[in-house]
Image (cartoon, rainbow, N blue to C red; front, top):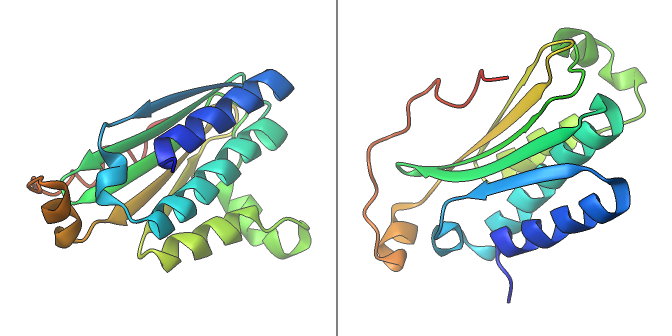
Length: 159
């Protein structure tokens, strides 16, 4: 069975072939070892939604998807070089938009006890960061030892 990294790699190749969208995936080795299949599926959905938002709305030329372990937290980040947007304006008018992508991403993040952070600047792209706490038993099962907690501001406000 394929894990999260393999599934994203295949999916991004299809996006490149069909939409000519360059999605660059960077993933720490062993991600699948510390995530159960359910969490991998939810993370795939959130990354998929973020990448498709970059394709459909941001007119991005490049999208970077990153999966990394920082201490006992998985950080999944999708960043684009698209047109960005005013997050406050979008949040204020969300009920009139006809799209539930951001709401769905937030709700799915909550399902796996994750936190979704969105940083967008008009004209400068968007960065969506998902922080997923990992259970200590996942590290034990993988034979790894959790490191210290990630820095709070490390990946959140970059664009």
